[in-house]
Image (cartoon, rainbow, N blue to C red; front, side):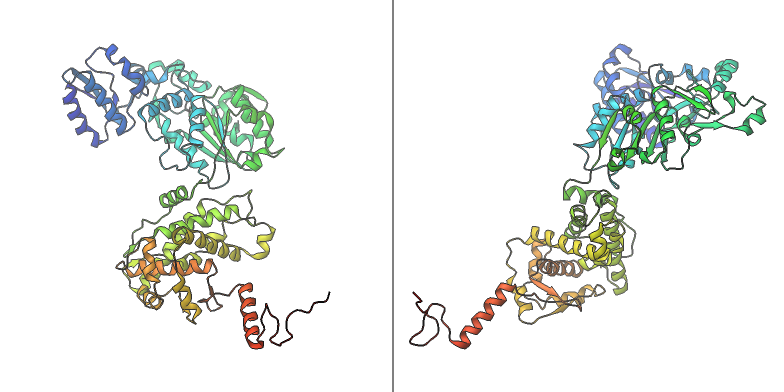
Length: 589
């Protein structure tokens, strides 16, 4: 540990040389100017007593330069290995500011959140679609120091959001070494640590936890017991130490005490047994537990975050009322509100940027069709609304679609793989498993429902590109007896040769942003999409051999044609009646 002396400008140069080597600036307040001059900046920039990332690092340097570029400063640079290892060293370090009595875990989260808000940082990078709905409510809950619950259907990023709360924790937290519940060095709550502190005093060993190590997650299941969550008497520990079985030192702590001074997340809260729920709200409010009939005070410093399905959470008997009453904020998540939001999420999450011997390219209209399938499934009456349609559906489907295109290109020795609508039909296994069907859907079958969803999705996306575009010549080619069979294994060049037989078809791909000099793989995908769109709107048809053929004429048009042919055959005039001299309607009056 060695101070760096010099001016603010020199400090900027020095810290840049240290930063790539995993050194950490631990006290920007230790400068060679009066602390009173830094006071206005400490609240907004040094509230954490640290610089958690490059954005904060740049802000501190700017503030130092604003004071005076030529003022001398001395800033302490400390590698992680030089963290205090005894209580005495900890008391003498700047870390003691983080251990003030009023700085609880929730206060730590709150102060770090204020720091990030002041710097304008992205609080939950990678979580999309919640910027104006869910995230402001989560921020309010943390600023209010609430335990909160995230209510939402599956695939709504509830667990991801909870896991990202670690970004609001200090990067390192000291605790008494060897303690099962990560006890506070200055305010221990377990008997073992109190006795150790009384004996060793300033020589008490100190260990450190990273932010990720302070996060504990548990999936609630009906078989979870109070011993799993709170703790139980450990007879082996009692026998080994010679302690009475009623002694606090013989307790084997459960998950909640082991999450002390950290985040404890319980997924699917309503699945917990009622007795375990009672144990939770006792911890949350009264701060005490009973283990095998022995009352033990455990004023844990923990933040509880829950997730649940709204249907289960509101069902009577699933969750006890006192526990609901002790949860400070109830926050509802949701699926993407717009198609563009869904596409952005799927682009981010789907494994499409993969190493491959060929180039992989996904057209925008394929992204839109895949996402539209999920949107339509969420509205379809044959799909169970209580289960929802997870955002994992378009993610898995897109990965499968790209893989099918990749397989085809590798077999055909092509340089580029571009997915087609036919590849989406080949990706049915990634779709049907994520649809919980109602009785009507079960009767029809998962494959049939998924195929209809794909066809309707193609139709909606097709309308967004070709609404008002005249494709009469393409339809007329089929009406004149043309037919076209496109196989999913067909190489791009062979498909282009087939599509070129249809007048104006490939020329119309310009509406999709694909020029005629584009790659064969891209043009083939676009041309096939147009045919699939016409088929979705029933302007052309597809026979049992999967050939595109002329569409069936509407019944009214067929009846009109038959009537005209019959009139011509018999010479009948609608206005004059039959052709005789006494023709016309008879006057029966």
